[in-house]
Structure formats: C-alpha cells, structure tokens
Amino acid sequence: MQGEGILNVLPRGIRLLLKRRIQCEFDLLQEIRLRAQKPLLLLYSGEEVFVERARGEPYIVTKEDLREMVDYISHYSLYAYEQEMRQGFITIEGGHRIGMAGQVMLEGGRVKNLKYISSVNVRISHEVPGCADKVFPYITRQRGLYHTLIVSPPGCGKTTLLRDLIRQISDGNAFLSGKPVGVVDERSEIGGCYMGVAQNHLGIRTDILDCCPKAEGMIMLIRSMGPEVIAVDEIGSEEDVRAIEYALHCGCRLIATVHGNSVEELAKKPVLGNMIREKHFGRYILLGNHEKAGEIRGIFDENIRCIFQEEVRKKEIC
Amino acid sequence: MLKAAGSVLVISATVLLGLRKAEMLHDEYAQMQYVRQLFYWVQSEIRYAGSPLGEIFSYIGKSAREPYGTWLNGLGTRLEKRDGGTFEEIWKTSIDESLRGCALSGEELLKLKELGERLGLADVTMQVKILELYLTRLELSMEEMQGEMKSKVRLCHCLGIMSGILIVILLL
Image (tube, rainbow over all chains, first blue to last red; front, top):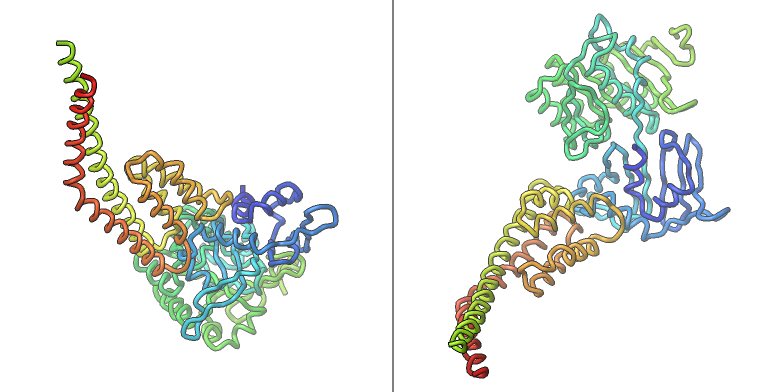
C-alpha cells in the first residue's frame, strides 16, 4: 500500500494518530507538514486539515517527533544523505520528497548540511497511470516523438506526467511502438528507486540511472544503454543544457521538465532561452493547478503557438 | 583398584576442563579477528558506497558466520522497519539479544556497545574515523591477548592437572 511507505517515516505517535483518526485516502493526500511546537497539518485534496489529538485539540509537533522522523528518513544514517541534506530535501522509497528546514551549517561560504531541523514537509508522489493519454496525440507524429519540454510551477504534476509519459513510451501505445527509454533520476523522484530498483512503473524498456547528476547521467546513458528516448526532471543549469544538446545530436528524443510559469518566460532566460529560441524542442506542455493539479494549460509547438488547451478541449484548438 | 580408577577419572575430568578453558581463549581471539574483519567490511561499505547502516548490516549479515549473521540481519531488519527507538538503543538491545552467549568477553561486548553511541551521525569521514578508532581499540586488545595467550594456555593446562591431583589427594 502506498500509504504504508509514507507512514513508515512518520514519528510513531503521529503514525498511530493518522491511522486512527484520519480515514484518509492516500490518493488525495498531498502534503504532511510538521513544524516544531506548531500544529500538525495535512494538505488533503487541496485543503489544509489540522490533525486533532482530541476533540478540538490539535496535535502539536514536538522536537522529539522531528528528531525521530529525521532518524527514519535517513535510515539512522545521516552521513548517507549528506548530499541530499545539502539541497534541503531527501527522496524516500516511492519517490516521496521530504523537505527540511532548520539551521544551516556552512563551509567555505557554501551550505554543508542542516542541523536543528525545525520543519519537515512530506510531499507525496502519486502515480496516475493514463494521465499522459491526452497529450500523446500532440507530442507524436508518424509514430515518432517530438523533443518535449514540460513546463509548470512547483506542485502542478510535472513529475507525475513525465512518469506516465515514460511508462507509455517504454511499453508502447496506440501512438508509438515501445522504445528503450533512459531515465536520469537525480533525486529518485521519477522511479522512486529503492536499492536501485524502481518502485514506480516506468515500463519494460526503461533503464534508470538513480541519484546521478543529470548532465553526467545523460552522457553515460547514451554511451552505455543506447536509449532512443531520454527523460530528465527539472533541468536548468548550464551543464544540463549542454548535455541536452549533446543528446539531441546523438539522435535521442528528449523529454524534460522545468520550473516556469509560461514558455515565453522561459524563452527570456539566458541558458534555456537559447534552446527555445533555436527551436530545439518540438513541443511544450504547460501545466497548472487552477482547478486541479496536473491540468494542461496548453500544448505549444516549436514556434510557441498553442495547439491544445484543456479548457477548450472540445474544440481542441486555441 | 577402585580408588585408582576414580583418581584417573577425576584427573582426566580436570585436565579436560583445563583444555576447554585454553580452547575458549583461542576461540575468543579468533572471534575478535572475525569481528575486526566484519568492521573493516562495514567501513569500506560506508566509505565507498555510502550506504545506510541498515542496508550494510543486512548485506553483510547474509554471508557472516553465526552468531554475527543473525545479529547483523536482525539489526538490519529492525533499522529498516523504523519502529521506534534511537539507533543507540536498537544497537545495544540487538547485542544483548544476539551476542550474549558468544565467545567475546564482556569487555569486548561493552566496547562494541559503545560504538553504537556514535554510529550513523555526522558525515562519512567522521563515520570512517569512528570505525577506525574502534578497530584500533580492538587490535590493541588482540595484541594484549596474544601476548598473554601462551602463558594463559599453559596456566590452564597446569591448573587442570594440578587441581585434579589436589582433589585426588584430598579425597584419598
């Protein structure tokens, strides 16, 4: 059960409380927020819910709860998660992201680690098989795939959509035959790997490089596994863009995600903007969460012309 | 005739006890060597793979000799289960449960328990140093034991024979 994995990293007291008090469906649970000396909060189906210890009395998170939780998240081995802690989050089995805040330790002016952790945010990852069904007609042509960039602000379902795209491309569907897909999963969010094995369904022809820096990973995959499609999450750095250019020149199709509010906004960015202006990507999928997470605000072609919008789906034209 | 046979039996029994005691000393030394080997393994897994402790213990436990295999497997399972308690508590409880009857002396078990107070914290460098410190302490104990081994073994053998003779004299 997906919920079991999330419950396992929660402090025992909170775990029991959630099991007993909240009859929640884990599919609707989006976030669990723990802050020292503050009430325990859930983001459930887009709404904040206070967890009560007794009637009208919210559960107050203690420092001990947070210490216990850090032990569980890190499998009692903080040293093994030093790199992740530096970024402020750890991804656990199942691809759920645990963000942390506290006192930052610096070394040579750079963030070395976190201590005295005072806030923890569990962002629950969801697998939504079939959520990519409606985009396939627009990102494929003659059983081939366009280089595709998924754009959205955080929390709008980029990774969920990417995961389903990977699964369908790998297994094959009505729009294309199954293709070998290489996934560079820097933060273990796409595959949710546990001991190297993906916990999420990514298809039968998918090879995953887990916890690998994107730029290095893409080149490694091209050399070692010969993928036809490469998928990466949250690109942005100059190295990422250089590796993408290398991948494009090797004949691989690319699917990537990036944070942004619109394609026009991305086109103005110095590093990624060049790629957009030079029309390296054939399709852009813009996601939003106005009605619900994962709604498609638009699919754009290489000229940033809208070719699909969910609100006017019946017309299927802007 | 009966007295002679009884005397032989008593002396044989005490000699056997002496031999057993000497064998236990050899056994303790061999186990210390084995524990050293196991922790070299743990150290290299932390240094090169940076794996979490539960994963390392479960992996090593699969091929470790008894009782260490059971200890490490149990420890790995309990850590993965995440069912309460700090690492130190889990570590110490597992030693009490699985290694109580092993050939290691109480002093060595105490050093092993103390190791659990510092494992899992800080960074990889610190973990490696902590294990190095434990291994140095273990090696010092082994050196000390080896130095005294010959005389202690001889003492066990002599005491076995002499105590047998003393009992026989007292009984006669």
